[in-house]
Length: 90
Image (cartoon, rainbow, N blue to C red; front, side, top):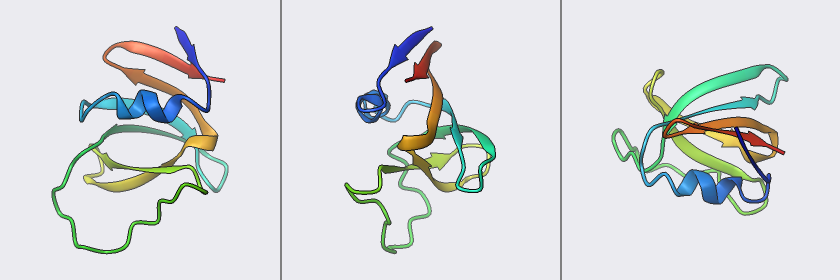
């Protein structure tokens, strides 16, 4: 298992270039969420406003199980699994 800094986790996720990855993070209500996600999906876009900005450390991904767009809070991210490699976020 590799460790990755909370400041570098954004770069690690963006380095997937659209490949499927899994993650674990703490939701806003305090519960643990496990998600299988992917970047770069443009299916079912409706042209609304994206709530992501540099201030709030959110990243928009496509949830492969639920079939919709979700946001991951990088500040509460616990673990990642990309191409068989486990990452622990410290």
